[in-house]
Amino acid sequence: MRRLFPCWDVPGLKAEFVIVIKVPEYYNVFSNPFLFASTSKPPLMIHYIVTPEIPTYRIGIVIFDKHDYTNISPLQNLKLWRRELMEVQWDQILRLIEDVTRTVEHTWQLQEGYFLKNQFAIAGLTDDGVDKLQFVLYREEDIIYNEKIDPIARKIELSRKIGRKVVGQLFGTAVSPSWWSCMWLNEGIATLFGVYTINQVFFHV
Figure 1: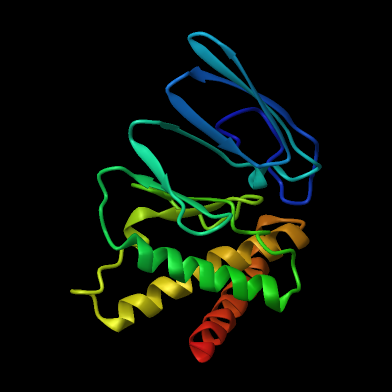
Figure 2: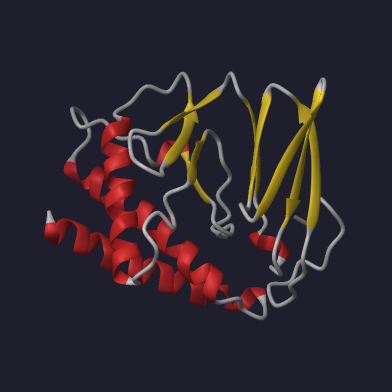
């Protein structure tokens, strides 16, 4: 965020943000889904985003060409956005995402579909390990899976990544460390319960 606008980029500081994004009509825009409205003023789309009080590092904005990315959503309440050209076994990946997400929601008694919203597989994503509020961002290379050529260890590794990402949304929302040196606690808790969730998924399977 410090590259996007002047701010005190400190985990312990929170504020409400009103963000306006103007892009050509052939772009899709996504952000933290609290108050999100769009108006058309050809050839631009204007997107208005109002957040609750959150630290700057929790803000997430994704913009991509509608012709490059598509969503696959055979599962209720889940849209996984991925590149049009990337044809792999997305049904396997979606099933893992659904199993992990449902398990987390059941374990912490969350409303069904709380996490199953927009998730993104982005090519070349530089993953800084910081969770965005109600945003799940995957690096495309990290979640590609081909059952015919990949070993079972790859599926387990993929499951752990998904578990870490989904659980990170839960603890990242509940806990805001006062300084960057304390971020290890969020990461550690998310990793621990991510592995726990995967064990639950495979145990029930």
